[in-house]
Amino acid sequence: MRQLAVPRSPQGSRTQPALVALVLSVLAGAVWQNFGQDILFVPSRLLSIVLSVSVPISFLLMGRKQGGASKLIRRGATLLSIAALPMLIANGMYLLSFKTADGAAGDIGGILIMLLGWAALVGTSIALAASSSSAQTRQAAR
Image (tube, rainbow, N blue to C red; front, side):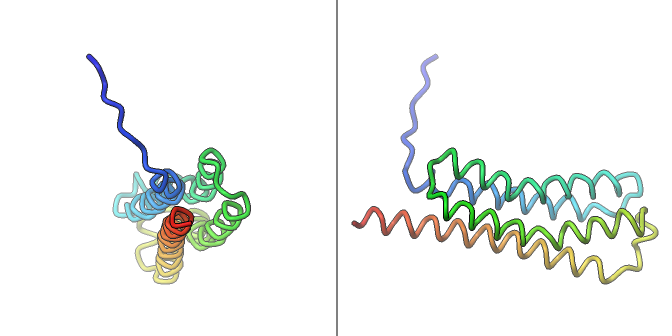
């Protein structure tokens, strides 16, 4: 069977690293929220840590693969790394201090730190996607 080739827009390829970072950010928060079951407490925190760390790394690798401006890619990866810190702190706090869903049931500080980190990751990813898109539009206008 013959496959049809789908044309790629240059704008889509420029925003792809930021969109991958956005998806990974959302997944990191969604996985983190699975704290109701004791059996999934530690695996969900570990997966959230892996996803949080993979956000800036994936942005950096995909940005270089797409041939983006190295200065902008480094700045974006740096911003995403800073944005991931609160999630890493919250996950570490939950894994090292509370260790179980029952132990974390009364916590209010860790969830606020996690929500701050999640909002920072998602917001930074959206801002990077928007800036990539507007830079591509300005470049096409020239």
